[in-house]
Length: 198
Image (cartoon, rainbow, N blue to C red; front, side, top):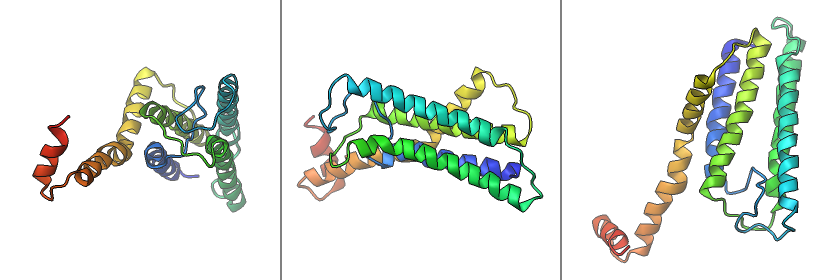
């Protein structure tokens, strides 16, 4: 895989996964506590599910590092290219299956994710996309040593990529609710009616 292709795959995945927690109400993270709307379960079961969920993601991250990062790849050979792309899609499919578990666990229930859960999901996706980017870097050559500044900057960039989802979830929804609850047709009156009574 060419360096440019690996970079664009990482950027597109970062853009999609940074916004996914805000656009989708279905949970992607098995939390050690009960979220609003989840089915009733024993209190001791949630931390155990969380532990197994984190261990599964860590194992898949290590597998991605080993399979993609240390895999032998010849760019001129079409079979080698197809095998490399197959490995990438295989790892992404396995990660998607693990991330689908929390939603499957609470199927048929209207789970309402809190802002904290959404931010934790964004950080989880940041770690997963970071591991994939690191594996791509290892497959293309030497991995450069990174310090804390690298992670602070890339986390900030990932949060900037998540801004459209944040606007959709928290800023656009509020203005629509304020307009619907107001009997007045004029936007200025709707703002005055919705915000001065608070």
